[in-house]
Image 1 (cartoon, rainbow, N blue to C red):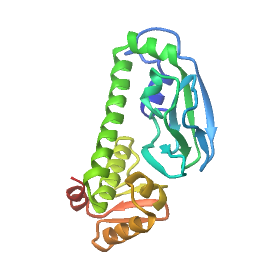
Image 2 (cartoon, helix red, strand yellow):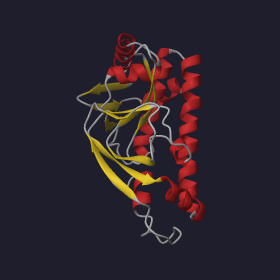
Image 3 (tube, rainbow, N blue to C red):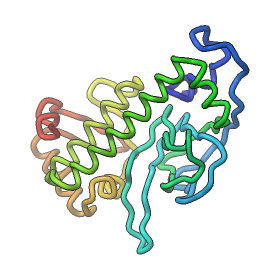
Image 4 (cartoon, rainbow, N blue to C red):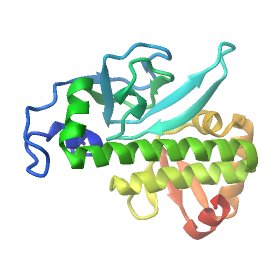
Amino acid sequence: MLGLGLCGLLIDFKLDRSLAAGPPISQSQTEFSARRTIFHQNQTVDNVPIICDGWATATFKLSNGRRQILSFLLPGEMITCRLVFETQLHVTVDSITDGSYRAFDRAQLRTAMSNSPATFDRILSAYNAESSRADQLIVDLGRRSASERVAGLLIELWDRLEKLNKTDGNSVEFPLRQSHIADATGLTTVYVNKVLGEFRHEGMVDISDRFLQIRNMTKLRRLAA
């Protein structure tokens, strides 16, 4: 688990000969349980946390209790790249599963970015991916149908999990509830249930027992395009 993404890169900073020589980046590890708030919106965070194991959400919560999931956080991902340069968190981070995160010293991380092209490139890539997901969310909520939104979310998560070698044939562990999908796509749980039922009926997707099976990838990608 620790070898995934940015988490593994920064843990092994001193050991990787491709990275600039220098002291290890100060870090601490924290375990979290499922269905807990890890960080609160507007909280001041003194370091840069990266999910190393488990799933979480980055969510914007309104004063009336409604919420919009901006991103699902997978192993190896920063909760937000903005924390490399800012101290105040603009989202709430809630856990979906049990897991852990590592908190890296912000100043040392920025120094590592200056001294190591590999570290700079990886963090820039993470920032670009986060920005692209934000742009896609705007398009989805503003212009796409319910079916297109759900298909796009499933494809996006599948592609990210595939890069982490988490997929197994046409199946992948999938701990999301329909409420998570609803809050990420701007739909109601009732409508999400309807859309997933249609996907199942059309032989595209099946979600059961915490697993996602994509039975017709071509058709699902066409719908999400």
